[in-house]
Image (cartoon, rainbow, N blue to C red; front, side, top):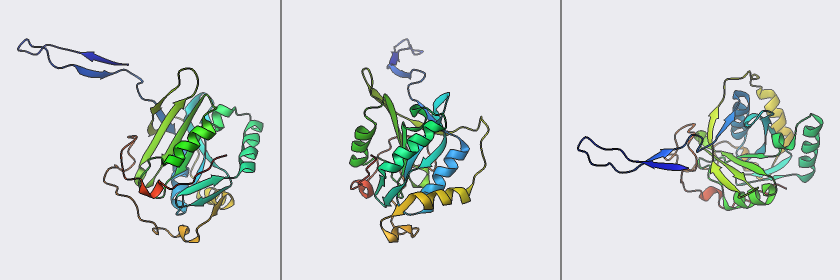
Length: 234
């Protein structure tokens, strides 16, 4: 709810109404330092999009403690998960004692350019693959720290809100492990375009609209590198 308030000026006249944001008007998606470092490493390791699922804290579902990749075929403008790998991932997570809310609600992928805005195909995938869940998050990390995040509710009256992004240093976290992450990348990612592994092959979008590592969401930009994205998350 946004309330309007008026106050009198020294001249006695009422000033224009001023919008007051109620507490909690926008949620925050928090990453542990380990999860954030891993996601940035995976984004920069190759020249394609890559994707995975965020693993949430059991007591705080908007706190991501890890990012897990699935077997996937990637290009600079698309990423497609393997159905069997998704099923195996879900089974493994249940065996480890996690509930679906912890491992199957936060869809994360990267854009190798500087624009984090979701493509039309991203939006279709979000509805198709996560529309039956009571809630879900789509999060995109592009170059230069530009991000996009949205929380969608599918139960009751429904609704959605954009998400701020922040790094949470308040709890203990594991050290970065580039060797482990690169092994996971090599095991999970199949690059369809052989030239995509060459860093800097694909031109970045205009970065002037984005501050490095900005937590701001939904900034407008030219998303032409992504409007033909063929992401399929089954």
